[in-house]
Image (tube, rainbow, N blue to C red):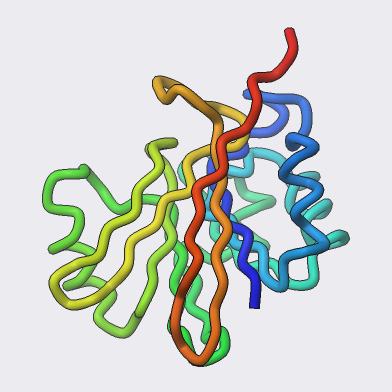
Length: 168
């Protein structure tokens, strides 16, 4: 099972549309995971139309229309892997401990908010992933997203993809 992980798309405020490289990944993904801050419902509609399955949450910049359609925290089982999605996890310092305590029932937690790619594993074995943002790099050198695979309850092939700078 192939996963496509993204967060903090902030459309249409930070970009007018999702990057073509990211859109090209949609048909290859079995599950698209979005960790919040969509900003517009059109992005959710687009992913739901083009993706096989979408697992998403709302973020702090998402208004009532998105909050009515998405949970604050999502939990799914994907081929035996217990995956959770949340927008915010707090400060980087102490993140592993806080998340391990708050989500003891998960194998992987995908989060966003900071726009900073993150890939660590807690002492309890919880894998924490932040795919960064495909549209708003902030202080990062590149806009990013992640892909991964799941088989028999195991996450593998986690890859951070850098996007080419937008022309402009």
